[in-house]
Length: 206
Ligand SMILES: C[S@@+](CC[C@H](N)C(=O)[O-])C[C@H]1O[C@@H](n2cnc3c(N)ncnc32)[C@H](O)[C@@H]1O
Image 1: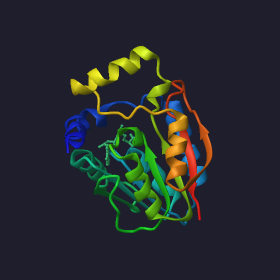
Image 2: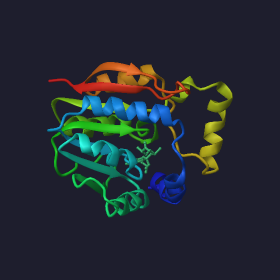
Image 3: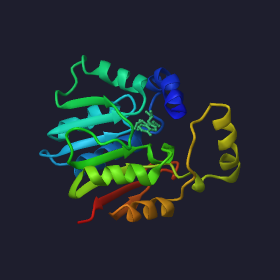
């Protein structure tokens, strides 16, 4: 799985990298915390090194976080020895896999959907693992909103293995993917300076 080789290779650097826009990150956490409930069982897919999982776990009953990169999960797991909340578990898994513990009350996917090769497949797995009416909270980079020189550069950066493979998306594309997968999109909003990564609040219909 070439995508995961990319993430395995950059995991240590990713773990050291400071958060891009700290105010927007804190706003995202506050929004997520306000939507989650203390009784919730939560799944986060594409959790990276687990930073967000460890911040959100105190707000819920149990927080399962998965990532397709063994190196990312290794770094996340090491944080569990350092006074982390006791209700978090990390697992190596593709975002399209069904995870033990389903159904969940909420699924989160932060900076992930634009990176997966099969968006409908991942959304079908999210849908299958949610309780009826369950929350899907995502933040997704929509490169169609970027200036054309940036858009033109992305394939070259991918070929050079400087950037991962990215599906070009607009906010409208994202909403359509979600609706086609059986979600009701409640709200899409932009946090932070870049205005390129909408947060979408959606619920499983039915
Ligand atoms: C940009 S990082 C985001 C990490 C974390 N969610 C955050 O917000 O910091 C993308 C993560 O998605 C993971 N990833 C990419 N494709 C994946 C897939 N198909 N299944 C599971 N994880 C995937 C990568 O391993 C990486 O950890």
